Length: 244
Length: 54
Image (cartoon, rainbow over all chains, first blue to last red; front, side, top):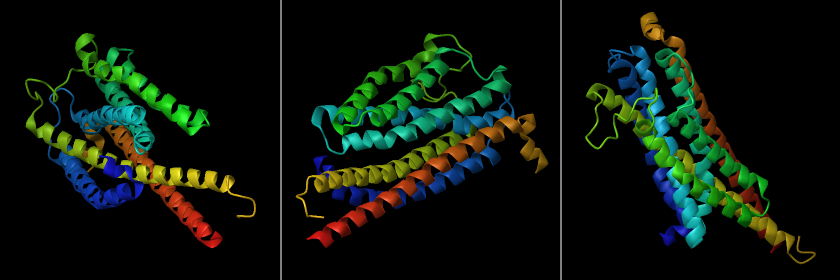
């Protein structure tokens, strides 16, 4: 693990993974969209509106997955002071915020025709809105505190405290009766969704996962650059007079 | 074709959901890529300056 603590080594690893992740994204997205629109049936209750599921559910899954990436990175940063861990949290946060916003927006657009309302203040929708605020709060803390070390610690602690929200999101539909349907894929007794709909759903979930890998690696490289520039600025500030 | 686009009467919901998702994901990817390029150039410039100093 600490082998990749070296930014140069990390960049080499990222450059090796990036073409594969990009290729996987293109293939999965193409196949996923094909199945989503041309090779899956309309739902017997929901009609064609069910096609929103193929982008709503992957966005929601990735919203939680990305939060766990950010939380593990924050934990690693706080406990082992791994040099790349803080950067990983910073790199993940905006991606998670976008996934969460998309889960909410696509959910509203699916809820309106099916439930008759864009929004209800139930356990699931409210806890996902809290997730969005956790991402935004994490990014705001980085912005608000000038001293990098303090900012990193505050943001990481917020990310860790927010982890309690993840099981609340997952089990909210079981704990509180709500308009939102319970899980139909990630169940202990196996998926209850038909194979013809599971196929495009899993392909699109794969595409979203590959998208995360690509953009996360780009953002990691960008955070490493930012860090290098900050260090270089400090060095030049403390350089002896006449060194410019 | 028209039937496909109408999405069984749910066109405005389905296509808005797909359109918003595509727009947001493309925006995030493009802006990340752009910032990466800018910082790459800044790192290169800093390196060149340092070489010039010594």
